[in-house]
Image (cartoon, one colour):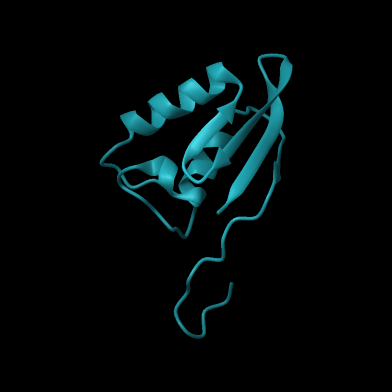
Length: 94
């Protein structure tokens, strides 16, 4: 069970968006934009540099969801919560 909350300024006001196991809550306009954007990107590989990536159901992957949420904030954004540890091959530096 993972919960991440992002806070930053958008359109001149401070907003927060929370991702909790695939569901978004918070600012309705920003949450709607993120959901539409995730749908538009279906079938495309999305994710942070180095992965993990998803090509469908983007909001179910916490790393991909975090990237999509950050995209609505034009400036500084803070995140509360911890992303789960990524799996890496033996000997990889994390």
